[in-house]
Length: 329
Ligand SMILES: N[C@H](CCC[C@H](N)C(=O)O)C(=O)O
Image (cartoon, rainbow, N blue to C red; front, side, top):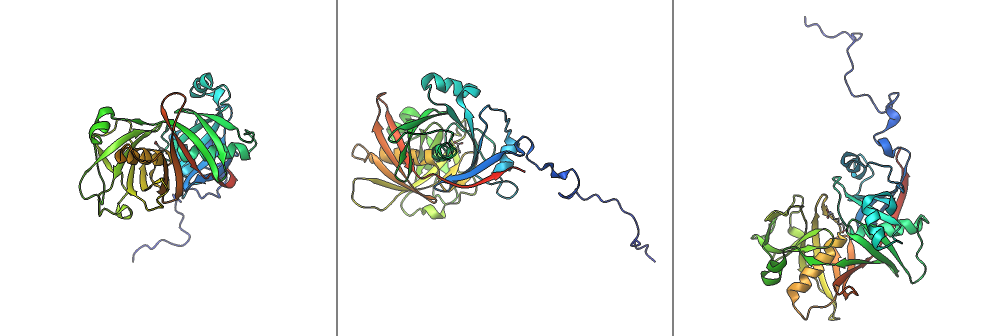
């Protein structure tokens, strides 16, 4: 007779302690426990925002990844920390150029990596500062904020905010000017590897024009496109196709993006600027200075303007929405 275990037999319970066990209410948040956060987005590129004026939080990659986890955390493409510029070295450098840039946008991708810039994030960041009463923008004036890509100037618009993103640059210099670029991209759904333009918008972007017959919506972006030669610091990759519109002198492109440190997102502000810059470059001297970039999450406007510093700046405009407040428990 087999020795079936008697119902009273004791056995060591090796299952993980349930959340309700005593002492388990410390939660996973560590240094964030008890702190407030907000959730916001710009054309579907979504962020968790929090304020840490004196830079007391370490925010290691593991914690950022948990905060941005859409099942176990709050969920987001990135985390944005509002920190006083004087509280961190990158911010003190910004204050030298712009003493009124009191707040610094500390942007992290949802894999915990630090990125220099976030065009959608800057708009949501400024909206957050204004809604929280942490900053004010007199009517018709601008707010300067610090980022790892320098000082950004932000103005209100009727439908959101316009950010002077600063100058754009070719990342591979003459190759881009002469024959597109030496970068070649392969991705699921591209018929053949495709030459691409590498453009700097404070962070690196690789822009690919789809060929006739290649359908933007059929591209597989659940894995990272392969860029050769491999960019040293990685890259965001945008795929663009011309978009229909009126004959109103405004350029229009449609794009999807696979973001460095995130994956495919609904939108990418710096990516939209890079996509417009590349498409305008490919269009030649008669290409327009104003563009509308359609992304899965909406539409942003990109305008190329001569700047006092002699460079050509890019102005990104679009919406910024705060959707919720919460507390890390
Ligand atoms: N979503 C951001 C870009 C984040 C860029 C980040 N993925 C990186 O450069 O590592 C934007 O709206 O510009």
